[in-house]
Image 1 (cartoon, rainbow, N blue to C red):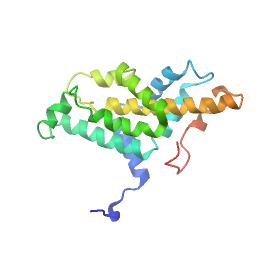
Image 2 (image 1 turned 30 degrees about the vertical axis):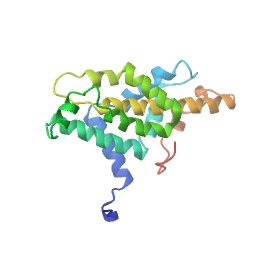
Image 3 (image 1 turned 45 degrees about the vertical axis):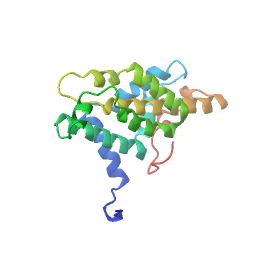
Image 4 (image 1 turned 90 degrees about the horizontal axis):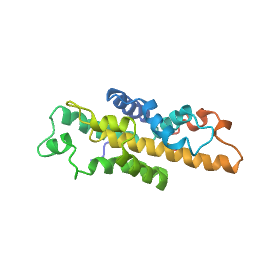
Length: 193
């Protein structure tokens, strides 16, 4: 059944996705730090602020927002022990053969091309920055989906920077020549890369 009368406005979805990240203890700057560490040696003049704006742009994509909402909801339901068995135990323990968390995260990465895909694979294995913290957080926290989703956002933002650097090189410029805001969201344009 398809009921268009219950559609949710894009701005509401964007706010909910960002609120979910904050609720789970993930700041945009945490993700941007991963992007910066991965890209700084390849991009002259790149600043953390450039990376923040790139992450913000990635967070404007509906695919990313939807993945965040689904994954974080499943993590939170698992923390509250509200999933049925055996799914509860699989997600709660972050079962090694359970690949749905990576699959959801990878789905949002495809929008940003092969560089984003390979970067996501690297981050999934290396667990850099806040990804490692989320993956190893002690206690009753379940971040089975969240660590992979953060990796996908960082990989996508890094890919955007790599592609922008190529454009800058062709123009004889570097990141030192552009304002960080140029990498950030454009008003009411949710579908641009």
